[in-house]
Length: 151
Image 1: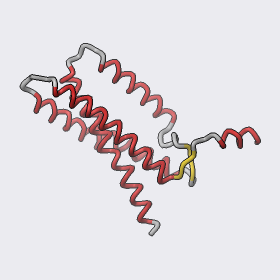
Image 2: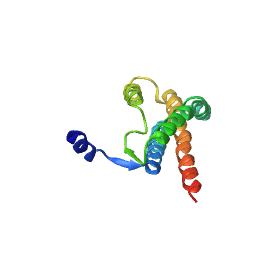
Image 3: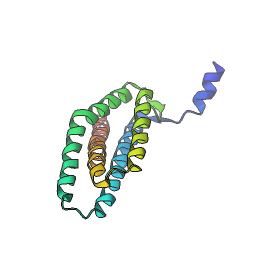
């Protein structure tokens, strides 16, 4: 009993609204970071397919956001809703999702350092980054619904 109390003392606990904001900001920031990689790669691309590459990435972002990432965000929001008033700052995702994130980060690093042309890699980075960016608004929307529901 005493051990769990001492461990809880070191848990970075935050309230539910802040957990929503933290999750949304994380998705928003990572999405912008991935799109920024792509932006800088495309600055150095002298090919004639720039518009096609960017549009392909945007279409992919919309599809990923609509059919995958929004579902992940909703699942995380439901997990956060089920928490108490305060919970661990890292609990906006399940531990299994952290494994998926680690695999995706590893794959991203490997792809970024591979011999693949960066302009083609830009399609994937715009797709995933844009989907994260778009899906981050699910967290912010739910946060504001909580905020105005109290009034």
